[in-house]
Image (cartoon, rainbow, N blue to C red):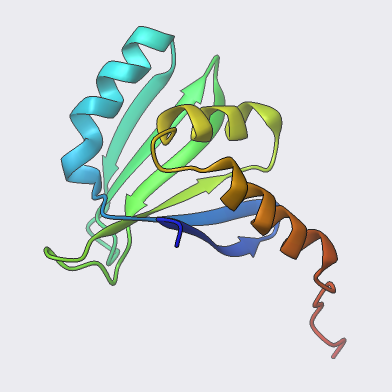
Length: 125
């Protein structure tokens, strides 16, 4: 079983969950990788949310990924949610950052499922 799942589509944004990660555990490593590759990493803490820490990765002013520990994570069972636009730059960054956790066979299976799934639109009021 893959260590990630497409959790949902929210408008034009895709939410992907990765198991066994937490933002506080990966922030320093992400910061170093971003520095080496010319990406910008900013972190914001929100006191008004269940999800306190958000990491934003951008390049040349364009937002690529938003990462946060999910609200239902626990210290012994943590995972993160990665928000991204389904475009080449965001997908390339996602694959680069999580190369050890993404298997091309898993990606192909998800792609096939989502290409053949019927669109579910809310009924008109």
